[in-house]
Image (cartoon, rainbow, N blue to C red; front, side, top):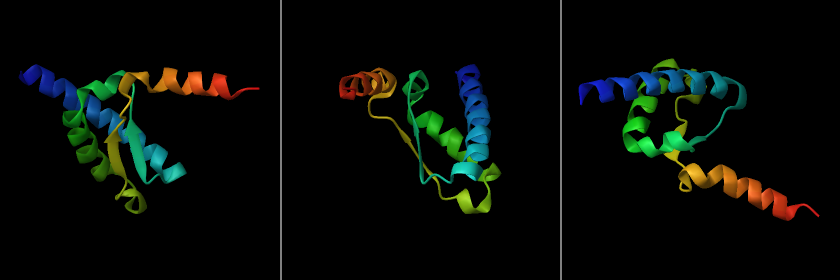
Length: 87
């Protein structure tokens, strides 16, 4: 469906631009994409990487991207582990 592809591409472009701006400040070696957006999977990473490489500062061009293995559950698992570790 071309409309769906166009939507994912546009979203990937906006996300990539934002990540490129963040990368200038924090210089990450890896961005892990989680939450609901991670359900888009590898197709989203294709567009993120495409637009990120065009916009990223030369020192951040090698930043890698991955989908979070916990997907949408990452936030709740992190919150639970934090609550459990509080004395």
